[in-house]
Length: 356
Image (cartoon, rainbow, N blue to C red; front, side, top):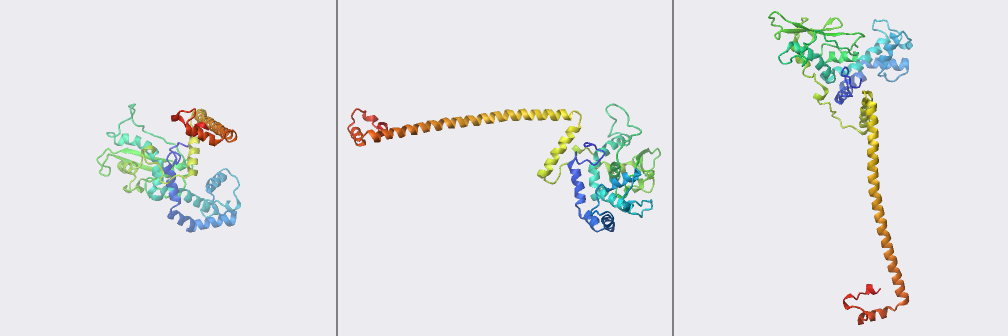
């Protein structure tokens, strides 16, 4: 799941997560979550009826899994009747809008970057049909499939819809269970000027035709396929083909988080545990060798210094002993007299220190 391209994956592409954070830090979001009637009503309800100051992020999952498994909801939320007027739907609508806000913010930048790899895979099948000259069949020689089926999550469908234009999806409805998005490709046999490429597409979501809601498409159910190609191929790409680096300088805490994520990702891959064990053993061995040589060098320095210090102490001790002997047994004036007369000494080697 950590390397899945069926979701907006900030683990693989850090810039994806950064775009999400930018949406929640925007003035537009802050204005809505702090000042809108919807937000004020929901927060007041949660505080007065349930004693909660803020609406939890997981409130929607909690409510939906509870009601869909016939378990008891809190009394304040146990009023769902499908008409849209109860506390249950007030809180659910706020939670949906809060969660999906980044999908369409800033022209859907978050959704476009996050869904780029999946769109590239989807379009690879379509382009082999509608633009065969520039996108030939695969190296295996197999023709493109007549039906390509992709199975994803609700959090796959919503950002996919958000990438297709402002009017295609409102951003206020959660994708229901078992939702389906269909992209049909039609070859136009007659010379219809509405479809200059010779191919048309139809976009269907849960049985509703949405083609006309895309920019540059008319009210008809079909639209020239180049409209879809132009809309999607501007951002359909693998993560490694785009700049996934964050624009914010990572802090120490975020770096530790990245290291943790890398470790978790490694352990989740086949053979990851053995790889981690090998890295640990290798690191221990390398650390032991490095420690041995460092300590060996340090001990040699200390030993050499100790030897030098001992010799110096012995020299000073010998000098002190000589001085004591001279001061106690020899008359310095007699030594000086002997030096001046050169008795018993070579003139070139007479040195007071030597005599001492």
